[in-house]
Amino acid sequence: MKELALAAALAASLGATTAQADGHANTVNLQLQWVTQSQFAGYYVALDKGFYAEEELDVTILPGGPDIAPPQVLAGGGADVMLNWMPSALAAREKGLPVVNIAQPFKTSGLMLTCWKDSGITSVDDFKGKTIGVWFFGNEYPFLSWMSQEGIGTDGGEDGVTVLKQGFNVDPLLQRQADCISTMTYNEYGQVLDAGVSPDELVTFKYEDQGVATLEDGIYALEENLEDPVFVDKMVRFVRASMKGWKYAEAHPAEAASIIIENDDTGAQSEEAQLRMMQEIAKLTAGSDGALDEADFNRTVETLLAGGSDPVISKVPEGAFTTAITDKALN
Image 1 (cartoon, rainbow, N blue to C red):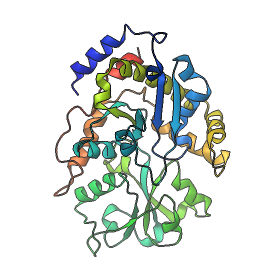
Image 2 (tube, helix red, strand yellow):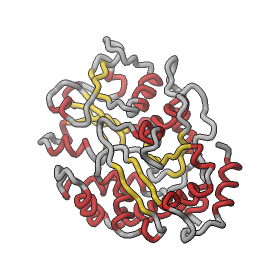
Image 3 (tube, one colour):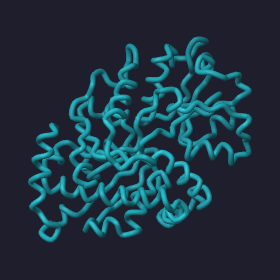
């Protein structure tokens, strides 16, 4: 949608008060990109500390998982907003799902490849002839774009890489099924170390350092909903409370990790692991007030377009983000 249309909707919402609002105006279903963990601490902290309640919001946080695609949940009406990596969101938008980034809590990327040093890999060119684990479900786009820019094929062979469709664990590396696997600085890399592997045995390639980092964990809503003044007002309050939660989590990582453990119904995670994750996550959200930096958006788009004959997106997207929500939320 156009900025003017959203600005008009925002202006119209100013006359509405939460006292007059009905349930639709105050309920928010948030679809996470993955299971409950410190990657999403800001939202759980905002819920636990009453920041959403201060905005008269009734927020339900919906955990994700390996069989849950946030864009599909959003399209089906199962959530008001979703968290998604921008490559996945822009690919979905180009395919016809009109998702719009309304806020960007994560400033930098935590994505990297972690490789066995004894595989002989010391540079990107050494990927040729190797097997690399890659996450799919929309998470494959940054890797595929990167390889395309490097001129490295992804169909195997001596001059290409063999892509192993990686589950959301580190087993392919530990079991020597892959020379490298996808990891996040705040999660899977720590899992590799927890398995008894020394950092000296590994080589890592951070997407940020390679100049191919794309934006992660943005907040997205459907374009048509942003034409509704009541929905816009709700999103302003939601983003404001969420960013308050994020800044609190950054300043109080141990408390944030404890809140995550309290909200994790699986009981499969340790507070120590969540604290380590929160400390790494804080490095990625640092410097962000929630407003999307257009330069970061353009960098992501340029990376995705540089995909050779098979780019992630085929043209610069229009209307894929708006700052109208954060402009109001942060004032």
